[in-house]
Amino acid sequence: MRRYPLIIDCDPGVDDVFAILVAYSKPEFDIKAICSVSGNVGIDLTTHNAQLIAGLLGLNCIVAKGAEKPLIKDVLPATDVHGSDGLGGYAGIFGDDRLSKLSDLSALEVERKILMESDEPVYIAATGPLTNIALLLSAYPEVKSKIAAISIMGGGINIGNVTPCSEFNYFIDPEAAYIVFNSGVKLMMCGLNVTLKATLTDIELNEMSGFHNTIADIGAKILSSYAANDAAIHDPCAILAISDPDMFQYKDQYVQIDTRAGITQGMSYVDETHSLDKEPNCRVFYDIDKEFFRKTIVKSVNI
Ligand code: BDR
Ligand code: CA
Image (cartoon, rainbow, N blue to C red):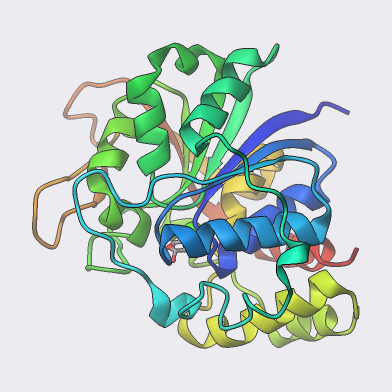
C-alpha cells in the first residue's frame, strides 16, 4: 500500500484530536510530526494536548511547538467550544509521564527538516490557524517543491462561524491564510460547507463509549462537552481529503482570502464566474459521505 508521509499542524482542540486519531488509524499515513500552533487555546495548551495524544497513542513521531500568536492579530481562543484547556476539561486527567517528548526544535524547523530530507513529497494537514505554515513558506520557500499538498480545514464559501463570512482558523490569522493561498503550493480546502456536515449521532457516541479502551474513553469524554457547542467534527476532514477523496465532492477553484478589518476579515471567496481569469489554486471540498465519515471516526478509537 502507498503510504503518505504526513505532518499534522494543529491546535488541539477536540476535533484536532480526532484528526490525529483518524490519521493514526489509517495505514495510508506515515505520520512524521505533530506540530502545535496557537488557536483554540494558547500555545502551551495546544502543545501539551498534542504531546498527550501522541503519548497515549505511543506515536513514534516528532512533536514540536509552533507559533505562540498569529502573524499580526492578537490571540483569541475558542474556550467556549473546546474548554479552558482545549480538551473540554480533560487535558489534566493523565500525568506528565504520558506526554510524548517535545522536540528541541521549533515546529518551523521540524517542518523544514522533514520536508527537505524527504525523498518523496510530503502532505501537510493543517487544522488550526495557518501561522506556522505561512512562516514556513515565507522563511524557507525551497520547501514548496517538497510538499505534495497542504490539506486545510478552514474557511468556507458564503458561510462563517465567527462572523457571517469568516471561519475561525482564517479569522484568527487572516494574513497567514492569505500567504498560504498565494504561495503557489497545491492546496486542498475542507471549509465549513463540508465540515458542518461532518457530524456524529448518539449511535456513534454510544459505540465509542462501549469500547472501553483509553483512547475511546477520552474521545467520548472530550466530545461530550464539545458536541453541545459545535456538532461538527471539522478537522478529520482535512486528513480524509488526502486518503479518501472519493468520499467527497470537490472542484478545483480560484480562492482568495480577505484580510481587511471588519466582518469579512478572514473570509474565503471563490471566483465561481472566472471573472478574475485566474488558474485554480485550490481543490475545494463541498460535500461529504456522512455515513463513511461516522464509521471512520468510530473505527479510529477502536484500538
Ligand atoms: C475550526 O476551528 C476550531 O475551533 C476547530 O478546531 C476547527 O479547526 C472550525 O472552524
Ligand atoms: Ca482545529
